[in-house]
Length: 637
Image 1 (spheres, rainbow, N blue to C red):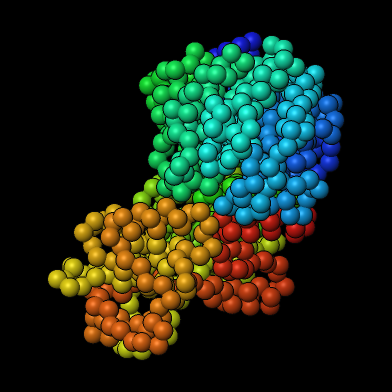
Image 2: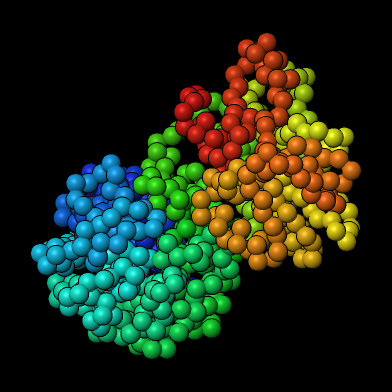
């Protein structure tokens, strides 16, 4: 069913996969660049039935790096549409206004506009309440942008009324406190959004119009599914299809990370479908063919939408149809975190996303030369991939018995299965590129001197740090627990597992232990004032889940020693003992020693570079990008 055709009004779609709107931040001028066209073109080649581009209706409604309908050159939009049509892929343009959801720092001259002067809990900046002239002007700007799209040969438009952006702000009593006819107390604040939709319809004629809504606000005191249904029923006469997401970006309920079950918010679309006579598109965490087929078979939706699956793998749709391995979205939120910071979107594990145009310009080497990559983790695999793609005879050597490095440990906690799928995908990629993979072999000085490679990439990774503490006991490294190298003792009557370190590794180790034994008592001790620092939105659902399972948290707590089954800690100068069946160390990592490789390379005057944790300690995505960027900044003839 997923690969059967479908029709929205007069729009013929070759299958049911829609690439949803994704704010890339790539726009720099008033024309759509070759870089942007290449980005969307690769997704069209990859089998999407339609690709959605975001277009702000005016400057006040624009985010950094977003095209604006008031100044966008029509011919560049026509060029994009024509380029996609070569692959039987349609172009949908989302008409967008950010409302209060931006900081407006460093771009634009217009103040934030919103139904009422209520700041976003994400951006904090206070917006201005829209006056009558601004309401009328914004409505006209939506209509103008719609007309621009029609005249440029765009196949359909989508009006954004979801996720906490302008039109959805009118629908919520939390953000719409107006006392005029557009206030929430008058028809649930639906007046202005409906006027926008009606005005756009008048200007675009029979061009298909999609409406994007949140199934519910998912914030205490906000609007619910019944309100969304009422809104869509009133809009039904002007629109042709509804895209249904989960909640708002500021919802305390996680929306798109790996913590969310596959297709978790599709029931919103399924319920709405019963109340309107229009097709619906389900989205949020639909990143595989099985989930998509199930939702279609259950009649939860008529089409399925995903942005990040196509960001991770441009060939996603084609590969799902052919039942081939694809590069899976990890739900790591690297993409949305950057968008919320006003930065260009990237994919944590597909560093070519956004660089498609530049990839076309990079030539293969003229003569066959050899590259050796030392290390089989994320940086090593990516380095070997890029070297082979550039035409080098590539050897990857690792003392580990499998590829993946510490990603194999990252795949252990609950809901991290996609990490294992990524490793399997990269194994297949390297095989298809004829990379010579040597497993279980430590790279030696003799190996390098004998090979005399043209270039060596050192991706030897990192190892855990053992902090200085009093006592004879040393504790267990979290990595050893995740790898199954260290077993935990039985739980004593008063004992518990004490995890030292409340970063990502500490939190995920706790989740892994609870997955293995839900009755375990666990306490996480952190020296800083918060847990999961640097993780952004990812830490919130993880910490919430652990608390619900009884895991205890101690912040601002220093660990001074381990002795006799006890952990000595100090809080505000006071010392305490924590009874511990085991103390697990999640206290950071440092680069592995690699001098034994660099010294002979320098002696032989052979070129090399460090990537991943060998260059700078980070996470898996950092390692992948480090290796990719090496092959963009270093000239390898």
